[in-house]
Image (cartoon, rainbow, N blue to C red; front, top):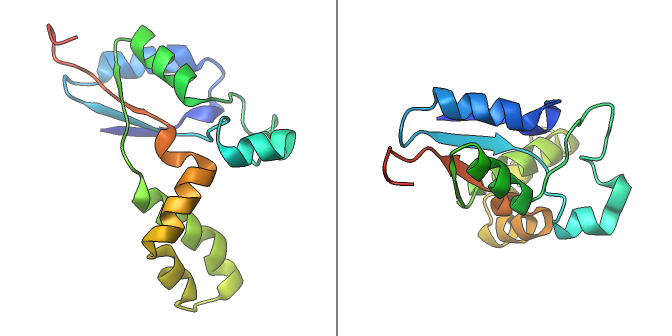
Length: 136
């Protein structure tokens, strides 16, 4: 499995092509990036946290990533990233609440993670699998 922060590459397709070449068959590529088609991104527009040109070079949506993956010989797959969502809740609320267990409690509530997943479109961002030769 390979995990990387995809929005910070100047030539993302070249990077995915190289990762695809290096992945073993049935290897998984898991990228982290903001979903520019999420409800929060659409509502906030240029004020969405991923729209920082000095930090985030490339901006993505699920369909664009699917197309990049396929062009690079990978097969898009969708999974629910509940652990990532809980981590982001803890990362955001933890410093505000100190060492309190409130952030941990909130992050563990399934309805909270489902709502935040929908708002930010985290699970709508596909990962990719390198299919064994002949299975494409």
